[in-house]
Length: 359
Image 1 (cartoon, helix red, strand yellow):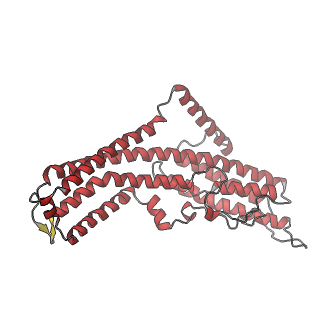
Image 2 (cartoon, rainbow, N blue to C red):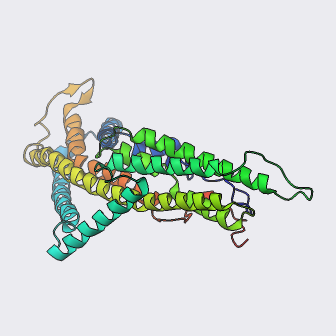
Image 3 (cartoon, rainbow, N blue to C red):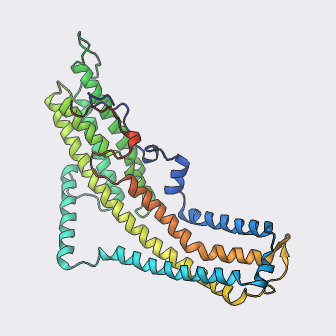
């Protein structure tokens, strides 16, 4: 963006995965890849690594078990960690439910705040009542933003020129407004299309909402309105209306994000419980039956069956923690990239160090 004109060139990318320095592949793993795949991948690596090290080790695992108790020691440590992990799940559930278990007065305030916000959105959309589903709600807001951006564009002239002194004329100001309005329209239309028919509880709803870069667009609209000369009253009014829609989109997105985080934490609790049971069985079985090197005889493809069983037990016992890591990785990534609400730019790679914000 030109430092003094509020135009949209040089702005951060609209899509969240394009903003920041993290590679698209890494961000795809953090956010879009199925959490089951993200949780299973480290377990496969752990299993293969243990088998490879066991094959290459100068002292076979069978000899180590005969002279000491490494398997039992490992299993006991894993058993303790699993029990601790289950306790963590209980704590997470308490954190999620604490918001839902407040006194009646707090619940009434939450209800009144929610109803008031929905009424404000309904007034903005000029409809009797705003959509009840989160995806439809966010889509309606995105469509309203696109419609108001088009209204901004309709108030300006498409001519683009400068005056005799080389200074931006009214036509050049109109060109900047046109560029800004076009970008907002395209971004909002894309988000609305991606939200169409999506079911809440999947990451697609939040992902689409995160790709409407409303905070930067509020900054651009405000800067255009306050620094660009010769804006018509119709353009200023249209920009005000667009800002109103963008400012409502911000808290709406934060609310959907909060609901999604709670949904994910509940799913995480269930997933950890489902994986904790086989993990407990595996570690207890290892303690009871793998203290004798002859408890698992033979070899498969030249690899000791005892080594394969120990690697498998270790991987299964660690599954609750990889599940925890997979879910927390997505939640933490989204939280870090949406820390601020409003026109703040936290990522240095999207900040213009020469931004003349006082002019």
